[in-house]
Length: 318
Image (cartoon, rainbow, N blue to C red; front, side, top):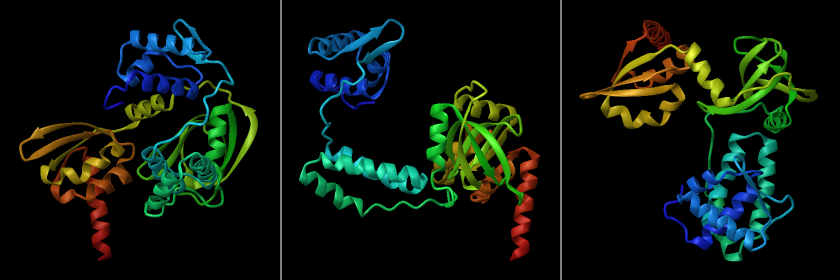
């Protein structure tokens, strides 16, 4: 969302770039992005058409631009290029080797159209940004796992996994139909329909021992990733309520969404927080122990028992 409404010329150029970035884009989507009325968007589109840009429209569908029509190379500001530097560092550390290499190649192309002074500006900050994930996100023996999964989702073709599930020593072979990928609690997960289990399952990317493309098309029509995740929480999650000292809140807020946070109530010096966590026994219980001396578990009893058991186990090793 823009902080200031752009001048009309800048907005029209931005609309043209948006049209080139998607196959179809709705007028309402453009109006929301630039914070203007639909009438203004219609007028801007007519201006582009009058200047020779081949735009087609269909009522109820949206606008599209003739395939093959492109602007000359886009010039990036140094601030935009700087944001790509941060993205490159994230790509190198939070995606697999295959996608990281592709992004590095894209960065070279980006730099090739920059002014020399802007190249120097980007190079000056590039070596001073360091990002280190807390966990190993991928098995080094499968350096192109995300690349293959992206292809599978786009082309609707099954992939074959050799997968080592938690608490097992023998990998299993799975044919899966990936629905989507999500990053949670410093780990990457795949949500997919598993033909071995005949149901939807989550797979951690660091437990993939081997991944192979196939030419077998999806058997099922899948809903959005978000709809499945919400459904899983509603069906499987147990509600958790904890009472937290306000003095500790600023230190835990950044992680709330990873543990199924849904609401909070002010209780004077404390805040009552409600959650629907996916993994109470390990994920939530261990997170709670980080600040447990400033909090109290209201429910469920199983969480209290799990925290007590973990605390005793730690005490026994001291």
